[in-house]
Amino acid sequence: MKVELIKNNGIVTLVPKENITTANINVLMGRIDTLILNNTHNIAIDFENKIDVHCAQAIGMFLSMSEKTKEKGGGFFLLNVHGRLLSLFQFSNIRDKLNIFDSKEDLNRWIENISGAMKMVSSTELRGNILIVDDEKEQLESLRMLLEIEGYRTFIASNGLEAKVQVNRFPIDLILLDINMPEMNGIEFMKIVRKEKMDMKIIIVSGYPSFEYAAEALRQKASDFVTKPYNPYDLKAKIRECLLNQQPTTNNLQQLEVVSGKL
Image (cartoon, rainbow, N blue to C red):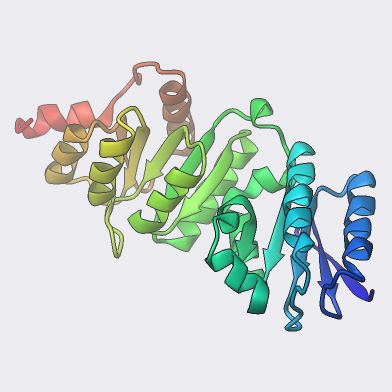
């Protein structure tokens, strides 16, 4: 069976050049087993060439490979699924048990979002999982770099809707949340999160430090309110205090409360 191997972003992608059948499925799985034995634990199969699956045992083998890579701290991914295989996934719960992406771009975007996770660094070695929510790409990248240097694992979202998906998908310890964003702003997102995760730690990082926003942030039990442009050292200190369940040395929300006299 002809299979092209492509290495990118820490993942080895197998691109079959012919349909997967009972005659060649074991060859393909053998290639994957060899990769796992050689310490390659992030593996994908890309069906971009309109390759389909014509044997029922392929599903069981995909599930088996998913478990093997997961045990090694990696992942098993299926890309550009279509035809009979896609139909099978649509009419069963198998899709929930496998990592399936519509394209390479979707997989790469997911890899960027979980950053350190794909480097197979154990979560016990990290200082915490932080979700950064901001519609400004430069702000996302700046915060992510700042936090990853400190040893945190970061996840990103550009609005409240994306952030909701991330919170439901990953074990988030703290959220750095902008307020003024399209589709779903920070306050709307906080209201939804509080219904499902009352104890979620949230620090507002926004360029809109109005008393109205501060009041609503307090009502939604935000941990603190940091205005842009922020001092990196102060922000890192607030994050440490928040994750350690310590009372912040200086809480900007409390300061805004005193000044406004409205809360």
